Amino acid sequence: MDIKFVGIFLLTATLLMPAFSAAADTFTDTTGEFLDDAVITTKVKASFAKDKWVQGRDISVRTDHGVVDLIGTVGSTKESDRATALATKIKAVKAVHNNLKINKN
Image (cartoon, rainbow, N blue to C red; front, side, top):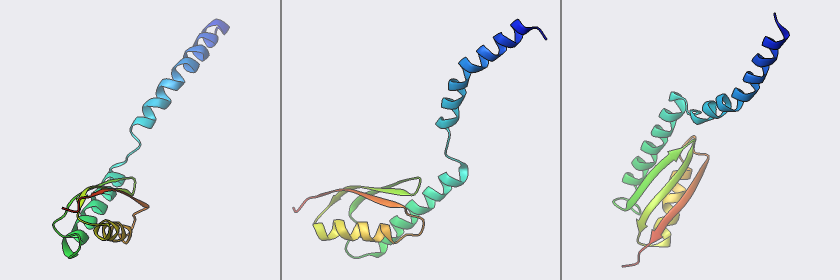
């Protein structure tokens, strides 16, 4: 092998490495992780449907890597706290972000 060829190869590889690293980080969700998040979301919504305090409230549930985001409007602090407590009880939930607004009307 020619030393010049080896040098060009190493330089090219060094310059392209950040591009490949960034591309790999873009798709870190595996199918299993996506399905796990979907299952968590479904279980949280099901627990809300069974609970008299949050049943029928305007609460959207989104899960990403086991972290549940609650977004919407509820009628009281008690309903907001109850929604957080119910979501926290679901297996595989790592954290709950309560972004619920309270509308006392």
